[in-house]
Length: 586
Image: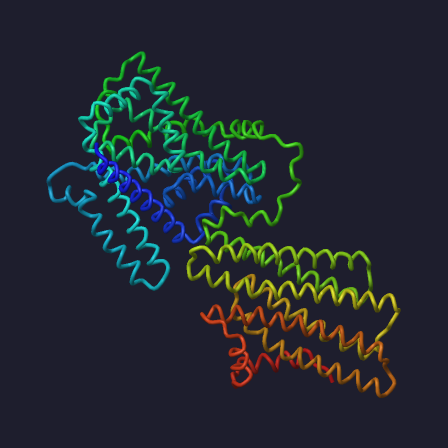
C-alpha cells in the first residue's frame, strides 16, 4: 500500500464522514424539532421510550445525537434520568439502520434488477436529484431532502473510495498478521474498535468503515465481531463529553449510556466466547462481508437490549451511585432549557425559546394585574411581588435574547428564522411592559404614602382605561402564545381607542383643575399613571404588529400602521367603533 493509496483512503474517509454528517444534519432540520419534542414528552413507560428511541435514531441516523439530546433534556429538567434509559436502549437498535443501508454495497449478481440495487447504479442518480433539489428548490423542506440524498450519495462514494484504496491489502502479509492478532485476542479487537469509534464519535461511521474494508479485504468473523463490540462502547464518548458542563443528572445519563453498552458487551461477548470454547464455532474463520457486519451489529444490539431492558432501574441506581451529590436541586432552573447542546437542533431550540418568551409575557401580564390591584388597596407584599416579577422578566430578557442570537448564527430554516426574528423583536416590548407595571405600582405606593385621593370622576376614568389596557395586554399575550393572527389584528384598533382615552382623561383633569376640583400634585400623579398605561398599550401594539408583519413575510411596522390609518378597511373600523363604545368616557 503506497502513499497514493493512503491519500485515497484518507480522502474516502473524509467523504464518508462528511456525507454522513450532511445527511444527519439535514434529517434533523427536516424534522424541525418535532421528533425532539415527541421524545421529550412521550416517555410514560419503558416500552414507549424504547420505541421512541428507536424511531428517532433511525431517522436522524445517530445514537450519539440522540443520547446528547437526552443529556440536554435531563440537564434542563425536561426529562428525568429514569425516562432516558429505555430510550438509550431503543437508540442502540435504531443506529443499526445505517449499516443496513451501507450493506447494499455488498449485493452480488448480474441480473439487471440486482445491478440496479447496487450503490454504483443508483448513487449517481441520487446525487444528481439531490444536487438539483438543493440548487433549485425554494423551500427548506425540499432543500433538506436534497441534502439528505446528496449526503447519502457522498458517503457511498466515500465508502467506494475507501474500498478501492485498501484493495491491495488483501494479499498484504503485515495486514493479515494484524487481523490474525485481533482474531486470537478479542480483547484487543474490542479495544481497537472502542478507540477508533471514540475518535470519530460515531458507531454508524465506524461500522461503515469496517464494511468498506470488508468489500476489498478478507475480514474474518473472528476479527469483525470483537471490533463491532468495541465500536458500540466507543460511541458513548460523545454523550460523556457533552455532559461535562452539565449538572449531576446529565452526567448520570452519560454514565448510564456507558454502562448499558459495557454491560451489554460483557454479557454478549462472555456468552458468545464461552459457547465458542465449548462448541467451537467454525464460521469464525470465514469472511464477513458488509451484509454480515450489519447482521452482527444488529444482533448484538437486539440481544443486549432484550437482556438488559428489564433492569433499567438497576442502571439508574448505578448511575446515581457513580455520580453522587451532596444536595439535589429542589427544582430545575427554568433557564436550563437554553442548553448549548440544543443549538445543534435549531428547530427544537427555537421552540424552547418560544416557550420561555410566552412565559415571560405571562409574567409581565401578572405583574401588571398585581400592580393595578394596588390602586384599589395598597399591600406591601403585593408591591414586593411586582418588583420580584419585574426582576424575573429582566433575567428572561437577558438570557433568552442571548440564546436567540446564538440560534440566529446557526443554519436554520426559513420558518425558524421568522420565529427567531419575531421573538427578538417582542422580547424588548415584553420587558418594558413589566417596567411600566412596576412604575404603576410605585405610583400606587406614592398615593398610599401621601394619602392622596382622586375625585370620583377621576377614579371612574382610571377604571375605564385600566380595563382597556388589561384587555389589550390579554389580546397581545394570547396572539403571541397561540400564534393567532386574528386576535393580533384586534390589538391596533384598541390601542387607538386607548390613545383617545388618554387624551380625554387629560382634558378632563385640566377642566377639573380650572374649576378647582383637582390639584397640581394629583395632576402629576395622574399624568404618570396615564403615561404608563399608554406605553403598555404601545408595546402591545408593537408585539401584535410584529407578529402580523413577520407572518406576512415582511417587517415594515410603520408602513403597516400607516396603511391601517389611511385605509377605510371596514373590519378595522368596526373593531375601533366597538372598542370606542365599550370604553366610553363623556
